[in-house]
Length: 87
Ligand code: FES
Image 1 (cartoon, rainbow, N blue to C red):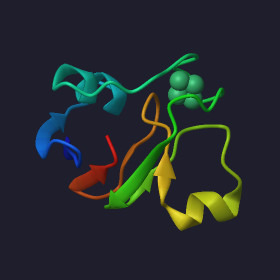
Image 2 (cartoon, protein in one colour):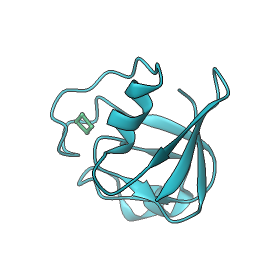
Image 3 (cartoon, protein in one colour):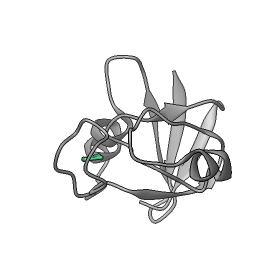
């Protein structure tokens, strides 16, 4: 598990293996848009403000993955204990 902080509200939520980051964020009030929920459409793109994302999408190019400044929370997870998202 890892902790996601929603920067707009300061709320934090623990994300276990049974939940996507998107689902976890919605449970604590985030209103992120989504469509495919499979990491292919790009609708849920979210800025990463701190932490290192574990990209699981099929959208980003290698250099975008390496930059680590955005993620697709319907599928992607975290390499660090804490991820701060612009949600
Ligand atoms: Fe399509 Fe996340 S909802 S990439």
